[in-house]
Structure formats: C-alpha cells, structure tokens
Length: 380
Ligand code: 5GW
Ligand code: MN
Image (cartoon, rainbow, N blue to C red; front, side, top):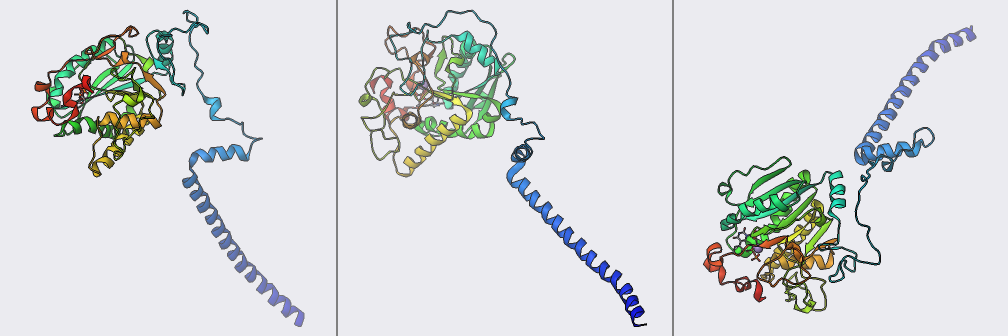
C-alpha cells in the first residue's frame, strides 16, 4: 500500500521533473549556441574574411590543400628578343654617374634598352597619369604641351593627362586616340604666384586619394611651360623618382639653393644633400606620390604658421623630402632641360625643354618684383 503509493507518486512525479529539467537544458543550450554565434560573428567582422580562410588552412592542414597567395601569382615571361649583350666589363656610359650610392639608377641615354622595358610594362598593362597645372595665363602653354606629348610621351601606353586649371572654358576639346585622354580638373587659383606653385602639392595629394589611385598606376608631375622634343618612356617609371635640375648637376652640395634658414622645415645644412632636384618634374606610384605631396604640403603649412616660406617654394620642400626619403630612380637633365644653358658634351638628348616665356606678359607685374624668382633661374 505504502509502496504502491510511493510508486504511483514517483511515477507521476518523475516525468514532471524530467520535463522541467529538459526545458532548462534546452534553454541553456540555446543560450550557449547563441553565445557561440555571437562570438564567431564578432570574430568574423573584426578579423575579416581574409584571416578566415587562412585560419581554415591552418586548422585543417591535412584535409585542405595548402594553397597560398604565392601559388596564384600570374606567370609572366618575355618573348624571345634579340639585342646586344650587356657587357659586365664595358659599361655603356663612363662619363656620367649611372647609379646612386643607394642603388637608384640615374637615367641617361644609352644606359637602358627601351624594347625590354616596353615589353615588361606592356605585360603589366601600365596606366600613366601626367599631371600639369595651367592656372591663369599659363593656359597658353597647354596646346603645345599636349601636342608634343602625343608625339613623345609614353607612346604606345595608356596615358591620362590631368589638367588642373581655373579656366576650364579656355581649354578646347582635345580628342585623342584610344587609350589616351585629357581630364580637366577645375581648381581654385591663388593670388600669389608662390601659392599657385606650392598648392600643386596639396591638389595632387587630394586628387591622388580621390581619383588617381583608381585610374592610374604611376603619376608624372611636371611644369606646363614645356615642350617634349624627344622620347620620354617607361624608363622613367619607378616607385618614386626625382629629376636633376639642369642648373646644378655639376655643383657641390654647399652651392645648391636649398633652404638655408634653420627656422624653415625645409632647412638643409651645407654638409648634407645628394643632388639638387627640380620642382618641375617628379613622380612615382600613386601611393608614393601621395606620401611625397602630403609631406611637402604639410611642411609648407607648418612654415606658413611660423611666418616663413621656403626660398624656392615647393622645390625646397621636395629637396628636403628626397634627402630623407631617397628616390628609387633619378632622371638626368635630359628629362628637364632649358636652352638658356649651354649644352654639355654628355647631354645626348634633350627630351623635355622649357618654353621661353615673356615674363611681363605671362606673369603679372607685381609678382615680378616680390621674390627671388623674378631674378630668373639663371641667376640663382
Ligand atoms: C605665375 C607667375 C609666376 C610664377 C608662376 C606662375 C604660374 C605658374 C601661374 O600663373 N600659373 C601656373 O599654372 N603656374 C604653374 O606652376 C605652371 O604649371 C608652371 O609651369 C608651374 C611653375 O611655375 P613656372 O613654370 O613659372 O616656374 P619656373 O621655375 O619653371 O620658371
Ligand atoms: Mn616652368
């Protein structure tokens, strides 16, 4: 009697207890699963899908094939080419410096084979942006600049001409063959010519971030008061390059017109300096040009806050940058010449030459009297 009651009660009690604890278990497992889902979701969004796939490979090295990025690199080989053998004991030029102490080549005629370089750059389908500023009256230089560039600049490669101007209506429609085009970028003009020249750094920086990075692989940034008169090709391209100023290739460092006032961020002491680089010709990959222009612009702003402006403006900041961020390639004065200088023996080609300008006509009169620039480039 007692037993049966006990049994009955236990029979009736047990299923009830079982039901309650299973519900609780179910509830706890649900929370546990939810927790797992949340943790993995958090891990996924913070670490990203790239580490996700890597971890999979690391976790299951035996079940998944160990494919790395290195196995997916495209195979590129040159075609058979016939050309003169390079001679270890017979360098192509002995009259000029062909390489810097940090192993950056200096580009001179006769030191490279353009066919090999073209084959390499065609394989990579390289796109080049040529930036040029035509502010105020300097729009007059644009027509000749582009016409001669079409004859000599990166022939056979993809080129975007980026024309920064405050007068987009002054620039007629320029139609170019497939793969080459003119892009007009409307920008403000500054009153002081020093500012016109210096603000190029800021504008190249900003457009590198917004636009150039999506459109081209390399940037070449030059003056507009110029004409191309011989080939300028992919031999100039590299991570970051500067150009030897035609007025200083033979000068000793203490004669360079670096900024010599310690108060300026562009200051370089007389016992430092490799070369005097020209402000009117530099370039490189878009990220490298971004870093360079960002540096130069920020140093200029710091100087402005301190009430000082470097003696040769953007050129001074560029020279400071290249002193402590060595260029990976250097262009010889073949790439930036001025016929006001006597043509020396070693100069086999003049590829990009300054167009003489009537200073009174092209620059405004007031500007002519307020800076060393008015004394002219041959009297530095
Ligand atoms: C105007 C007056 C004096 C100096 C520069 C300018 C000026 C320069 C201008 O009014 N508009 C303009 O677009 N520039 C840009 O800055 C041009 O791209 C020009 O090539 C560059 C550098 O100025 P340059 O070429 O007069 O400097 P230098 O050292 O080659 O004579
Ligand atoms: Mn110029």
